[in-house]
Amino acid sequence: MAQSLDEIQSIELTLWERLSEQDWLANLANKLSELRWLLPKFPAHDREFREAGSVLELGAGEGWSSCVVKHLYP
Image (cartoon, rainbow, N blue to C red):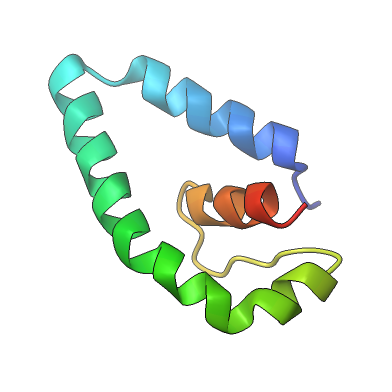
């Protein structure tokens, strides 16, 4: 069964709440470094994102990047 965006965000928030301060900072730095290279890729796929009715993230891990796409292209 597919999880809703709210369920995915809840899981992500729970993960962040349970991290130690050191792990929290390391995880944040990792996410921001990944987002730095991911965001510039979006304009090349702007039309596809705008026309899409859903997002499938393969190998999602925590699913944060699909949450970014859903936020930018509701």
